[in-house]
Length: 142
Image (cartoon, rainbow, N blue to C red; front, top):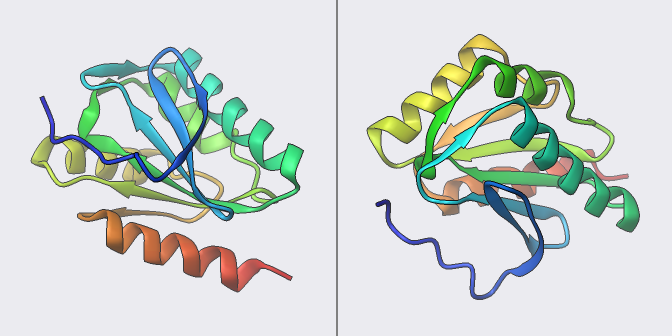
């Protein structure tokens, strides 16, 4: 089991078969996978669809924090979807949060093998990831 993530101040707006989706603030979303989940092409498509539905409906561009420590495995199909499916018009960046060796390894493999169409970086803390996501949306907002 990984450390819990305090989502009590975030607005939940969706759930997929392997994660919950939150709005941290208007221009920052969070993807909080269920502890020990697997990520494949189907779950990746669900994730991107839920994020884009939220952003397109609201007409907002946002950075997305993804909590990597909870993911047990991620296959090549998931990496392909995350590489190709994001819409840079609505998804400004992906800030991958990983504090465990395994979470950082999954994130680093993802970034190294098939980086997404939007800027993506690995962070050890939520605070660092949040600051970068905010900067990414501010620097690209009209």
